[in-house]
Image 1 (tube, rainbow, N blue to C red):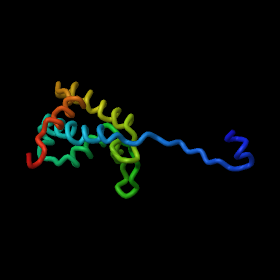
Image 2: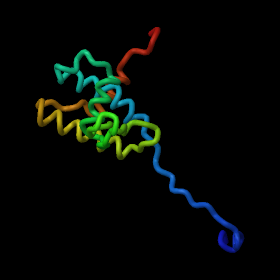
Image 3: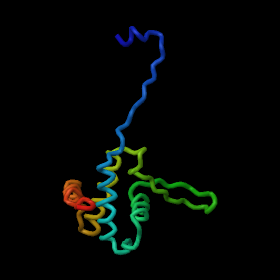
Image 4: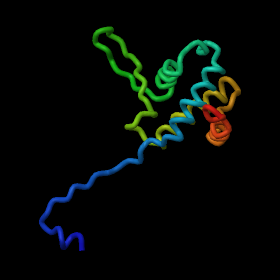
Length: 126
């Protein structure tokens, strides 16, 4: 029916990717970053943004040649932006989880543990 009704017309088809999950982003910002910062002694005085930048350069990066400095530099690519998707973010967090387990013998809080913690927090003015 669609083809018959639109015969001779141009139809635009766009691939729509799944948007970034707010639950995954909240888990990353509220549980993963603080856990990493608490485990890595050298990073304890860094802000969440600084830790995020370091993790991007470690696990989700690209190298480029900078003609001004005449050297190859590393630039972190975020997996937590609105342009990203949940699968990419989970893959990024999984790399962090493996690194913490191998280097520091520490596990990240699971999303379920984080949700229980957040749900158990008292609501303001209660």
